[in-house]
Length: 88
Image (cartoon, rainbow, N blue to C red; front, top):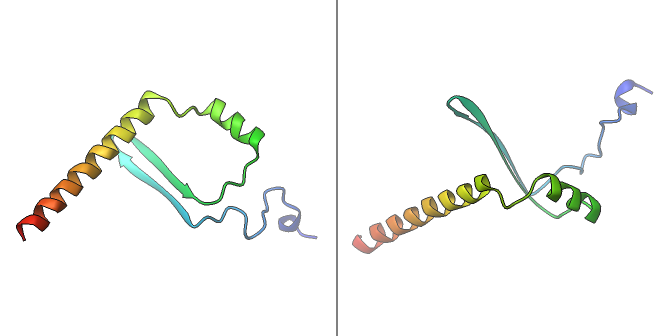
């Protein structure tokens, strides 16, 4: 048996595969931002979900700001597209 076959980090081919799995690094002065969007069926158990929610709460100022800015940008883009469509 080789080391690769006995590795603790080896996963089945289907593990970690999601229909949407976007991972990107954006250079944002003076740091780089890492953004991850994963969409798929929930595979974590209740205990792990509760543990992660305690470590990473949703209701933070950074999350509120991000959602607000995203909604504003999408709204402005939609209004702009509606304006272009109405004048055409």
